[in-house]
Image (cartoon, rainbow, N blue to C red; front, top):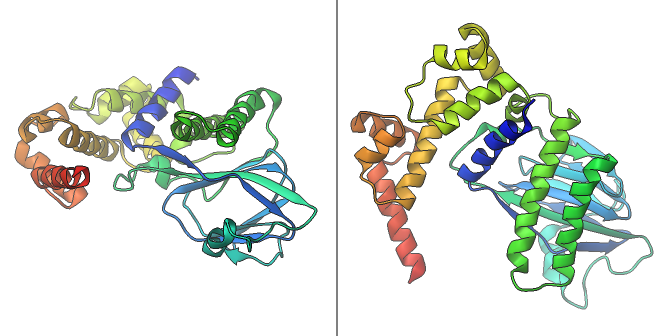
Length: 316
């Protein structure tokens, strides 16, 4: 498999969905301890640095983490972290409210746990299958030595920036967390932790080739026959394989990709709507307007106007 091609597809997706990492304050607690975290619309992650920890996702999953384990909760499910599986747990808000006071929770005890946590934000108006088709849990146990070179070094650098903040540390920490996400995805693909969904499509060289063509040349009037030819498959085999792995038909994926690119152009350029329509592959401005409104519930002109007004108000 051509790794450069694979990661190029992923890079373009992460850029278009405005992927952004956020790292929480380093978590330290003494046993007994337990915290319940509410459902979130973002992808949340935990990395166990030291000590014991049980992670439970609603009533579905319960795992005992070991030092170095990295867990990603893609759909932001309600979950808990605790010293033991049956530990008493307090709401996250309660823990935060008292964290910096003399009455802070989980300070007394012998068994210490240290964790790095955070979440990944994205444009949730764009329901890309990269996000929507992730499994309920991505769990990487003790990594192989060659993987640790990247995952552990990235984690160590995040911890250094947190412990010894310097100019630009906030941005550095969040950018490093984004690198941590990519390392996690790479490791999951290499170790075949993911066997379905959009990420599994990236491991299929034929489908990843089609994705690359669609993303690099959205203006082109693609036909099923052309995409199948570039992928080295028959039309029927290509259509069925693409839909099975990506979760969308090739033309639906193309249309969604075009709409998201158009949205970016509306936000970042002064080009006329007709010009943007043409640049993303629509010769008819009326047809483009209909599809855009169907996708985002607003016309392109209204979308641009509302965002311009919002940005103006924010800067005042």
